[in-house]
Length: 134
Image (cartoon, rainbow, N blue to C red; front, side, top):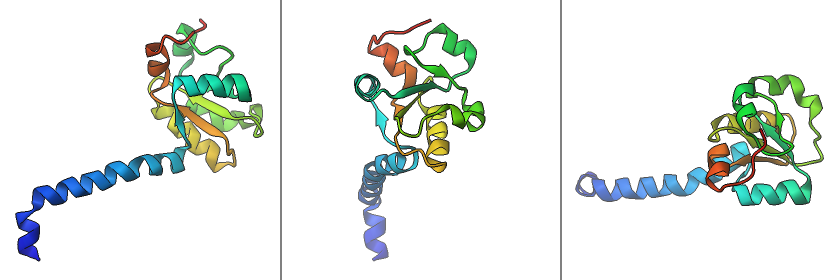
């Protein structure tokens, strides 16, 4: 058995990395909620009246944000939960997705069920030439 493992280290490494690559998205979605593309976000905003919460710092938010987005920096969300409706979807946005995932975990932890993260954040939004307000 040990001989097989030593002879096939590369094969075993590829198998382990493949398993991790397949399971990671499911783990991320379960922990943070689904990540959606800018096109999916637009549908969520227009058809389901999602609350768009921009968790970036105010200075970044003022440079450009999604229409009707509310600036709620990630470190203030805990104190502003009362400003959010639990019935409507919540779309969390940041620069690249990291802070939005942190906020998503917090919201899911206190009972919000319709929590979405803009995949790759405002970087993806701008790359798709989606509209911004200043």
